[in-house]
Length: 71
Image 1 (cartoon, helix red, strand yellow):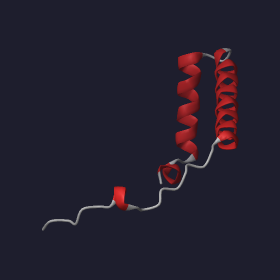
Image 2 (spheres, helix red, strand yellow; image 1 turned 45 degrees about the vertical axis):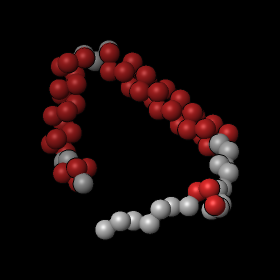
Image 3 (tube, helix red, strand yellow; image 1 turned 60 degrees about the vertical axis):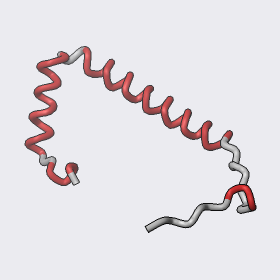
């Protein structure tokens, strides 16, 4: 929803603010670090999905019956 409210003018203001805060030399380093972090995050998620094991299914039995709800 918020992405629809961002226009070209907003992006220009953000770019100018970033240049003023960090300078032209520091921004490529920041973007590189951000890209590496995203790459590592995606890799960790993929590895977690590959190694996940299905949990055993619990079948209802005499030990795990629910008590009736009281009104």
